[in-house]
Image 1 (tube, rainbow, N blue to C red):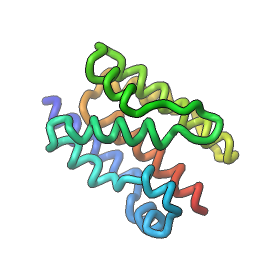
Image 2 (spheres, rainbow, N blue to C red):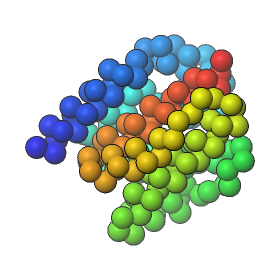
Image 3 (cartoon, rainbow, N blue to C red):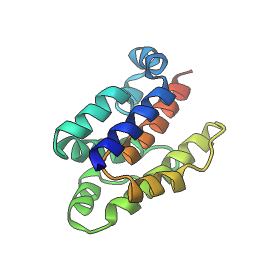
Image 4 (cartoon, rainbow, N blue to C red):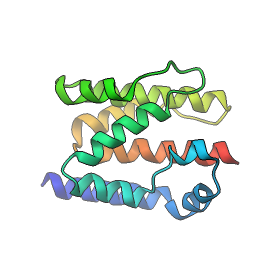
Length: 148
């Protein structure tokens, strides 16, 4: 049942995100923003079928990528180790990274809504893919707007 819920919620986020438009922008993006952008289909499939290995890589890369602007610099390796070994730290990590992304969006004067609570709720109640896919959609939107 969890796999069916995750695939269904990931598919709905995929339909909402319209990744084709974002993908065209990411090909021409500046080098710093290519690190932030990950195609949503690729992200969902790797999250489902690599048994958590991709989620570890994604955690590291996301923490490093969001260490810019007014945000404090955080070590991706330290956050990854905390997410692996400290129970329930992953929920805090999702909330914290969402807040950091909101700060970056506010620096650029984007119309950013407070989506950190939504990410936290998804992380708690819909395991595996939903929270990471939602956060990746927001990161892709930020990377797209940063290039424009």
